[in-house]
Length: 319
Image 1 (spheres, rainbow, N blue to C red):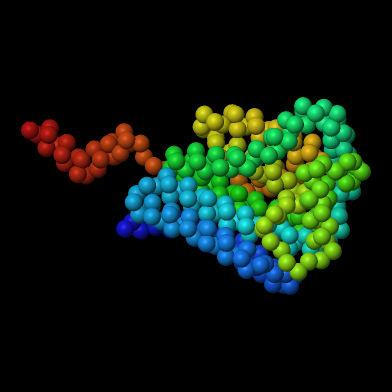
Image 2 (image 1 turned 90 degrees about the vertical axis):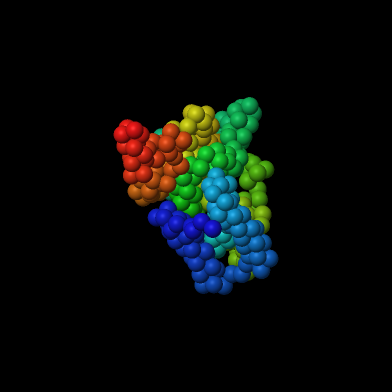
């Protein structure tokens, strides 16, 4: 059976996953919040099955399946943990900062409320923006499939950046909560945002339990959709899908504001968080390149240039 090498990338993933779990359950303990036992056992069992599958394919030398299953395990596990984490920090009840966020927009000569009003008057554009906003979820599956089946280790970098972005977003949201532009500008609340506001108000009143089940995206600043969009663009860099993904996620950035959930400064905050994460993880890219699978010509060339290959070449030349 092949041994699993503890590369810098793998160690970094273990460290971040452990930090997220420890931070979440430590915060839940401090705040006196509980998670239903089945909400813990379910993701553990599912992720455990994915990890066992990844180990099986690694032992068989099928690296592409291993990468895909490992990525799914990390995405499912961290998503199940980030739900309770963001809900837990929302119970801290720090003052709303909608006024300050709107003031930042105004300082740049921008008004999220005006854009939301204009979007509502143009149904076709509104539909396009909603579809773009929702596209990040199938794009996550796409990045796992495309990079995973290509045995592209940049998938590991994407996962690390995704987790770090989630951690930073949760930390900032804890102290800078907001309800969104539709509330601040007294606009009609979109149907898809009603549940988000309901959850925010429920958490502010105080709760005893938090769960990942039916969890809503309650973070306004910084925009995590922005972080997703930029990380997806970076993940497909150098591939033929890069430009379609870049165009689609440019629409995602705009849709963050048109949906009535985010201010312009939320997008700026997401861009800053993403830049920090990308710069912080750039040293891992060199390690990632050393793990990249070799093409057939590269393997042939390496075998020829190896000592054994050199001796064989000399013998042939002598003959």
